[in-house]
Image (cartoon, rainbow, N blue to C red):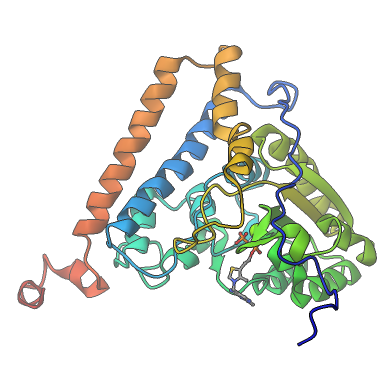
Length: 352
Ligand SMILES: Cc1ncc(C[n+]2csc(CCOP(=O)(O)OP(=O)(O)O)c2C)c(N)n1
Ligand SMILES: [Mg+2]
């Protein structure tokens, strides 16, 4: 084995992830009411608190398999949810709990799905990586890196053909930009003028590999080779996500031209639960926590007197209760759909 041949940056931890600028737009200037801002806060807290409890339950051994947490990235799912129309299609990766909660999956259905129970959003058959809610145009939850990118183009093709006025939106990680599927799909999406919005959630790492070690250049520049428009967006600021995605989703809807956006964001937890996170420093984590999207929105709401500490504390407590109740719900739910019929058929009492 020759070790004097240089192939790629190797053995270095990338501790120099660009920090998105931390500034807030004014909510009134981007067309958000005070009530909507409070709803955004609630939705972000729901995702954060749901996952904190999910992690605890996993550690207690209530369920197994993989568990990838979205904690830190909530401004992306939330800002987009407010910017998109309800009929727009959304596809995402295995890091999907936050997106599921944004797209109509209740805490009960989400927790039960993690626990593998029949009352889960996919009847307990999908688990953590496969949350979905087709009635709200949320198609999941895909575990194979990049595999859902061509599917988003397929949905966009159907939407264009049927003239539904919907767009399809596809969220994937920085690691997925290295997959051939992205490049093939960008090509056909531009050629056929498909109404599809591709969104990279660049959280700095593909498993334990820093972005600069697995991919060349600015990720959003992949669009240039296909004459597709692109933009880099601060994914740590829910107002910036909302404003940009409102504008871009409208362009995609009206022009049938695909777009590629890159959110600069960060995940606070390891890749999955078995990750010792030796590839990054505590300082880096602290830096990103200092621009936490939830803390910042809370501060903004208090500064602007959109809400009070008392009201926000009450919201937090309500969410805590909702999630504790979801654990009880999941615990008490049956594992098989037939058990739901238990009250009506005495034989199931015996089988249980
Ligand atoms: C085709 C394929 N190759 C490898 C894997 C193993 N794998 C799971 S997640 C992951 C990293 C993906 O990182 P990124 O796209 O940045 O998403 P993130 O986990 O950061 O959200 C890899 C390599 C996989 N699931 N599918
Ligand atoms: Mg990543």
